[in-house]
Length: 417
Image (tube, rainbow, N blue to C red):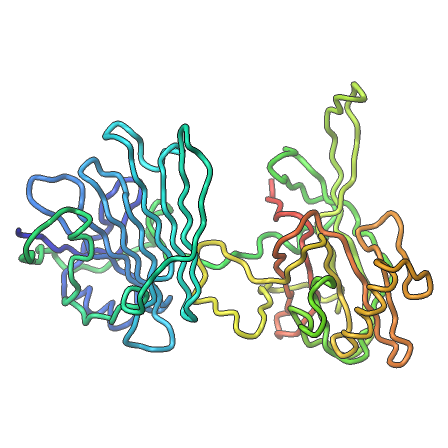
């Protein structure tokens, strides 16, 4: 079978078409430079492509999208180039099993199988059943090393990875499509593919700026009010811990951020809004906390970054994935990392054992409990989150790169309106 190979700068997801076709020579140059480009495989007599390969070496990324004859995506494969420059990890894949030709692409009733793989041998396979069966079923995938990893082919020597899924037999004959090289102007439209990104910070500074209007998706209009200050935190050791205080003993805090030794203001970002209260039978006003902040400096943050634990590798992140601290008790804390164990022991005595001398209870606040290590003067302040799970820690930096604040959103990130 003859398979036509075409190159382009990008792939328009909505149009299912290449954006700015380029020659094989220009694609080779972009490949060598690490710039994004796509490769499109087609056969005669079929409108939809067989597969589209999405490449961005600067992002350590190669993606593969496989289409059926109806133009529906039936398989996604996300591969990552890691420490070994000659191997690609098959990091993440999704397969859709359409029940008939009339089922729309990504229909919510379409069964699908998701597989996540990690370089240390871990993995997870999730089968989502739809229709009358419903539910999901998760197992550990049985994957050989040669299935987990793929040797990186040289430019122009990639196989047709979807050949089996497309039911093709025999070795395909590749023919490179002609394309006139040209100078591209402007950025690709928003409908074009881009490499997956780790979760972005959003309007964090604005949550502490009175008068800004935001929405959480449920309440259409909320107004940021003056941040509420709830005391201070002493960090004499110069290393701030941000973690769930309910983690296993001896594990240490999940996130640490170097700060100058000192005493810092603790704040709550708050929003006010109105809503129709059914049980009161009228419209009522409310004020909620959206985030907690340890304010290191009054200097405005020029940029925000997500703090990471040692070993967190952003090259492994799928779209909008986060790093952060884990909690099974809907609780986080700011603390001096140098006195972590004694502070945590005091927290357990105060919260679990009810020892009134172990900590100071805070009322009517997301900040709920303070403990102090008398030997060092270091403190821990626990705060409530709105649930269990993983919470990212956002570090604000000045234009000079200095830490000016550390923020945890106790709910999701609101949007500006």
